[in-house]
Length: 306
Image 1: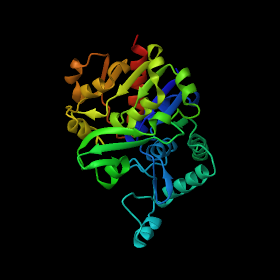
Image 2 (image 1 turned 45 degrees about the vertical axis):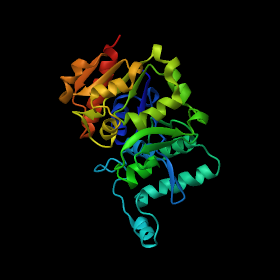
Image 3 (image 1 turned 60 degrees about the vertical axis):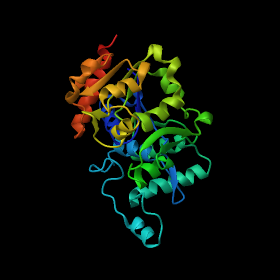
């Protein structure tokens, strides 16, 4: 089975890692959201892409899920002392990634080229692709005006109330090199447990999957468990948009896209209201073994579908 995984940050990276433990490199491609990419301190930063790559490489911080393990913060401490903005923390190891990415992009390389080379350097054998080599920027319309995603998410700690979302640059963005081929060769798509609004919607908007849906199984793993998220503002966003946050809301959000959905055991009663095939299991990935187990169960679920 050739599998395509769509992923945002920490939750998506964990399931992608679980899938990578089971599937050989030629059978798994991970397409990652770049809508939250931005420039900071003159550097080109790709938070979700780095989180997925670091996780697959075994380099991610095990406590936060993002950033590098065994990180030091000397550069950031000195930048702060010099009066530089310090609301987005960049560890010393992580900083090297952004410096080299920026150098290569400024030299004319594409984001997909840079990502391929970084994965090779880090020993990541599975294919990881940005959703687009063109800039797409998630803008969050709030009760305090429109904010770039990282300004809303990190600088403002998700405090402003959300009203809607806009993906700047979407009209001129094309799928990154290799993305269309990965979709065409896929037998199934797994939407990892990432924020539907700001992690998965940008990917779906760029991919234009409608022409492929009739032949593909598309399975989502709900990022919302018992009305809450393990990490991130997805539940808050649903609520502020007037939608009760739940696994049912996630299923409804993807409308006719899904063949099935995976929800947590805490939502076993709610699962009875979902109108598509539903796998109920433990979806919280606290350990590496949890990631592999959930990936295995999700693949078995896909295999059981018509």
